[in-house]
Image (cartoon, rainbow, N blue to C red):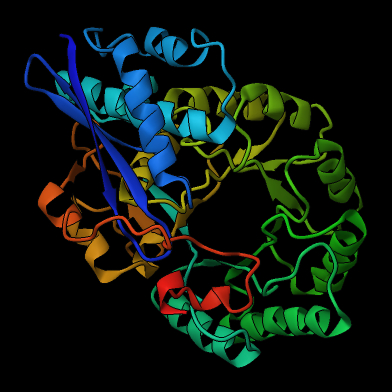
Length: 385
């Protein structure tokens, strides 16, 4: 079997353009992948096209060699942009291999470790930044069966919070806890907003609400800063979604300060690289909650990954809180039933692209999530402002 073509498609979701890839072979089997990266969909798309000549004609089963050609052999380090392009192809290769073997991807890596995957809801709090709005929406999500909710209560904060914003953020968390009760886990999203002192102060203030984690309270670009917060915070720290190499994870894990890791398969060059990092995390007694706030192909890929991980912790779900047409752009969309994801037994990823539906939602440059702009939590497209 040989790779004969790589095609790309962009679906213009109002808060983030989704980039998909389709890798075809001379035997008629094709696979689909995803390379979404917030504002940079067309940039990653261009990188895929530049990498394509390196792998046309190759056997899609040779995943390691193909990945080396796209990463090592070009002797360039393009971090997330580069690795998202690689991931779009690499995920599609596993889809091809699974289809050729008539097996789901997790069966190619040792089999399924879980009967179903516990999910947490993200993106559910679209609306005004008030305790009342967050509480109302949180209660509705919990009533749908979710046992864990993630949210960013911080508005457009960057590095330092005013006393008003500090108190409002605490009040939002308190309101959500009161709305859902003690039986639902809270996961607090920091989006790399703070310096060390502010992050630690806030972690101390919210400890009484018993969040499961405080995610990326400081920028991922400083591993020492993340480690310092983790050692001083009474709330467990979660991080890893923005890292793009296994060496970065090795440096972070060496501290034994962070034990909840969130590798993003797109930022790491695909599924097999992430699977190996998950084993490294396991060697440091950590658990894995892969980042999965991209498009529906990424959700399916993460479900395959998580099914195979002994140290899987929880699966992120943004899909239910996206645009209604999202479920139409793929077949066999990942579904959540009473807060859990049933594990697909279909070959490969278990999903396919609906190209005709994707083309109804064209790329728009203003489609991105402006996390440091006041009112971003309302999740309106920039063209609506």
